[in-house]
Image 1 (spheres, rainbow, N blue to C red):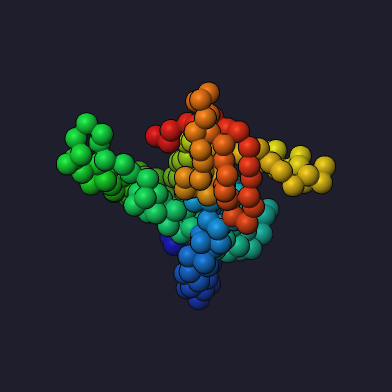
Image 2 (image 1 turned 135 degrees about the vertical axis):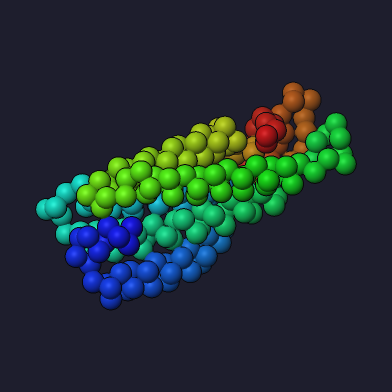
Length: 233
């Protein structure tokens, strides 16, 4: 990236300023993550964070393909804002790894957390190694758009996979019932029974295999209703 910026006539001072701005943006990501978690829950905070990264990297990719766009503005703004999403998402994943990995019910002495975290960091290191091979193969700054596009596609694929994971856990991506309730002026919304604040709601089991949510919180909202129990895998 630095070689490409020098090829596009960025000065050393401009590159240093960009790296400094990105560092500050990463700190902002550590502030954003707990705020998102408070209002939308831990799982959805990850989706918001990674899609923020995708949307902010899009103008960067466009500026690399076009000589007509104000590349300085697009790269500076896009790269800086994308770091907020990167760090926020990284913190979400770290917390998920700490809180959501359950022991094997058939072997309580097994260390599932160690196995899953080991695979997680091994895959991350593998893809980090792959970026060096990309820059070795396409080392000419004139074809930098190729490894840049591959990298962007990987981010988009990661965002899509995480969104599918979110849908499988929650059964929906947005609180449509709350949007409708807000529009109609109603204060009662039907819960989905999966702990929208990423914890387990207080409930009582009835004879039909469903449970009545009593004190179900999601951020600053409360909901009540009859819901079906679904395990989180």
